[in-house]
Image (cartoon, rainbow, N blue to C red):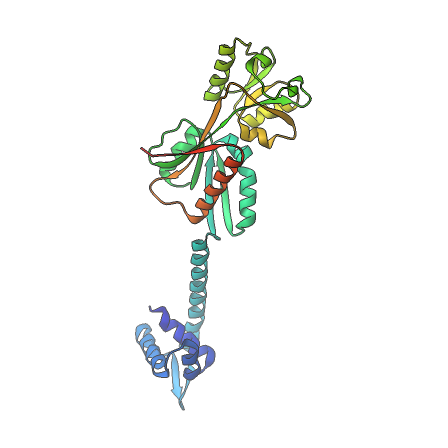
Length: 302
């Protein structure tokens, strides 16, 4: 059914005049009459009684008018929704992230994003990096963040790397050092990220190569948990710079030498272009990671 015919019918009922309806729609009176005739032919019943040169809606016409008004209202809503989606001011954004970024990096960015895009609904899912990567063939998620290495098959990714830092309890003696080394940390209670993460083995190797005592007193899966232990005075650690930044008020942070690069990939499906909403959030992530000293590198999918 031609929507223009419905708009003409509604205009005639609203104005009770073909002349005024024609003026409202910017067409001629014969065009309005012709469109009403076409609509009556299409639906199979009369919409108006014609008497004395005026049109009076029939009972059927009045009943039909109610549904037409609702339908046109819904269509206008759809047009507005499409315009908002096109402008990136309406829609949904689903982010799947590994826990460290899901706890430290992303929440402030999500808070800023929903404040600036009040008609956008954001869903943040945290899983380990392997699961985040495995979710993407389903295309149920717009953006993924995972620790490297990951399989780049079927995704477009940007790799970000930044040097790990030392986390110390407030007031610790090593605060006096501008850079902290394994030798300075030798023998101190050390709370590390779990040994199934590449960063754990890179830290252990740095201690071994320096001939320092890697006094491991505990492990945790999340850098945020490690920061809480450090803040409570229980140990020292080497952690990712983004979690360290979010805990900056409760711990002391110093550069670590030798450099251990912490790497994450930010990616989306290679099979479909990200929405304008997703693109804006990707830009927000990129800007924030660069502010925190990360260097981006675009990765070509396999």
